[in-house]
Length: 203
Image (tube, rainbow, N blue to C red; front, side):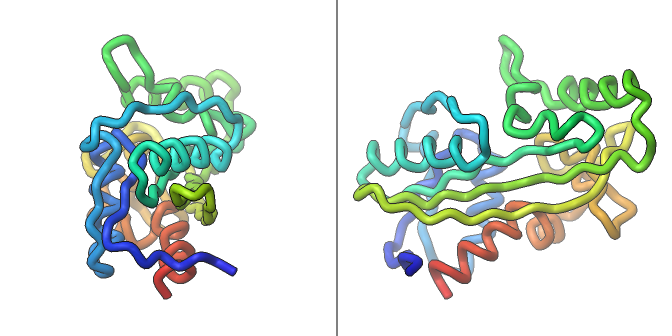
């Protein structure tokens, strides 16, 4: 039996302001006060697992334990079929530099790797999202979502964040980076997982 969410506030285990804004928008209709681990000054635990679920669990449980309140974490990334699913769980790592995350560099790396192997068009890919809602007593609930599409080049659009400017969803002629944020929040991998979360825990 899925545990329902009955609290009035939710901690989101992220230091990513773009992700926080997306989640806040998605939960807006439910009157839940959303804060982030960054706002509370909580550290970021080491993500030592090799799956989205494993890393989301680490983040959610660490935040719930540290704050004493329910915490929601997501682990998400882009899987490119011609690259055997890379960068996948290492999506954010591909953007890491000593000065912080550089997503244009990471997107260029995806393009370069595809060019290097002469990957044929369409260069199919998907974004995946795994959400874990954890309570301080150790209980958790898991929800997963995805959006299918393909990698395009050059980068297009200034909306969104991460790899959005090179991802064109199936059925669209524009990238997530060119898409109105409300439309993206309706169709994204995170929205897909959130639909599962909302229907299970709030429905």
